[in-house]
Image (cartoon, rainbow, N blue to C red):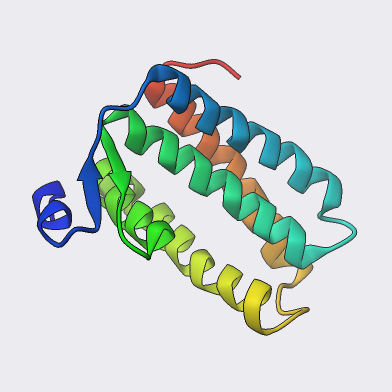
Amino acid sequence: MKYDDLLRSRRIRRQRVSRAEVDQALQRAARDLKTARKIIAEDWDWGFAVAYNAVLQASRGYMFSRGYRPAGAEGHKNTFAFMQIAMGGGYEEMMTYFDRMRNKRNQAIYDVAGLITETEARNLLAKAEEFVKVIRGKLGTKK
């Protein structure tokens, strides 16, 4: 799949995005990591959800930097479809993991309270921290 496929299927759209919007998304990712670190010991579901949101925000920032936005009702899903392409083969496993966590987060938030284990929450937080760092490096931004 390529960007053109996502554009044709209206899963993403081209849009000029300012550097300020990119930076705001990365700032939200940093805020969410900080919040997830604080709450993860108290509430695994919410710690997981906030760590997931850090990944989503960093992904959106990267997407914005390339001149795209998610489109349609499935914004999270479309963002990760874009990132699967954008990040390339070296990050395929990581992006697949985050997409699986997207599904798990939906279940934990909307369907089954207490679904997330401490190990799952802490693993996602560690991977989210690594991912945000990678995105910052690709965009040439500091913490």
